[in-house]
Length: 339
Image 1 (cartoon, rainbow, N blue to C red):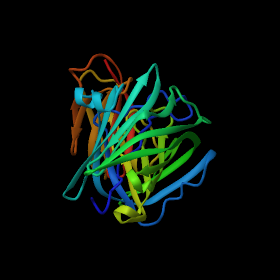
Image 2 (cartoon, rainbow, N blue to C red):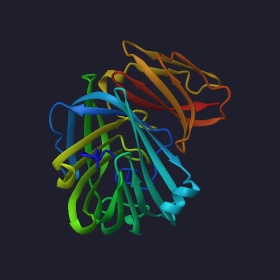
Image 3 (tube, rainbow, N blue to C red):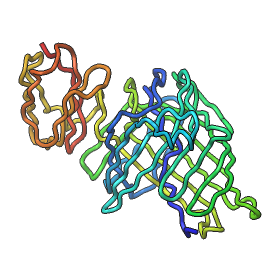
Image 4 (cartoon, rainbow, N blue to C red):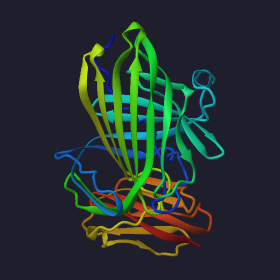
C-alpha cells in the first residue's frame, strides 16, 4: 500500500459567466493555467454581493492544461453513461502529473461519474455527484449524495458522502503574480465543498477526504475561470496520512474576450482597426508574451507566442474578433474588426 496519497485532482471544474447565467460546465479545450504558490494564506471568506478578494502575493511554480476528450470504450464500461473525460495535465519542475474528471451531460444536467489520478480512482457509479442543471445563476446552491468505490494500488473499497455546489459571491478579484503588477477583474465565484468517507473491508471507515474548491469567473466570459483553488484535507491513518492538507492554486493564462483594468496596459495599442489584413501591436515598455485572436463565440482562430509586433488577418472571415494580449504586466483584450 502506498504510504501517502496526493489528492491533487479536482472533484469537478465548473465554468460560468459571472452574474449572467452559468451557461457551460466544460473548460476551453487547451486552456493553459499558471500553477502558483502564495507567500501568505489566501482569504476566501468574503461572500455575497460586491465582495473584494486580494491575492497579490503569488509566484508561478508551474503550468497546467485542460482538455475535453470523448471517453473510450473501456472508460464507458468503468464509468457508465459518461459523455466527457476532462483531462488536466500539470507540470511543476520536472514532475508531470495527469488527473481525469469523468462526467455526463443529460439535457444540461451535469453529474460527475468518476475521478482518476495516479494515486487513487474514485468511481461514483452507485450515485453520481450532481452538479446542477445548466444554466446556473448567482444564488444557486445544491447538495447531493455521492456513493461508489475507490481503488488505490492493490486496495479497493467503498466511498460515500456529499457534494455542495453554490454560486455564492460576486465582486472584484485582484491578482499579482511574480510582482508583475496588480490586475483586477469583475468576477462571480463558484464554491464547492465535498465530504467523502472511505471504507475498506473489515476495517470499516478508514478515513475521510474533505475538499473545498473556489472558482472565480470573469463577468460575461463563459468557460475557464480566471483563478481557481483546491484545498484538500486528507485523513487516512491506515495509510499514514493524518489530517494533511494539499493545496493547488491556478491562474488562467489566456482569458478570452476579457477586458480588465491595469494601468500599465494603457499604452498597448492595436492598429489599424478596422483592418483588412495587417494588425500592428505597439507596446511601450511592455513585454508581450502571447496574443490570441478569437471569434465572438470564443473559438480561437489565431495564436502567436512571443514578442509579436504584427499579425496577418488576411485569412480570417470578415467580422468582429477579440484580440487578447498577454504581457508581463497583465492581460488586455480589445475588439477588432476585420473588413
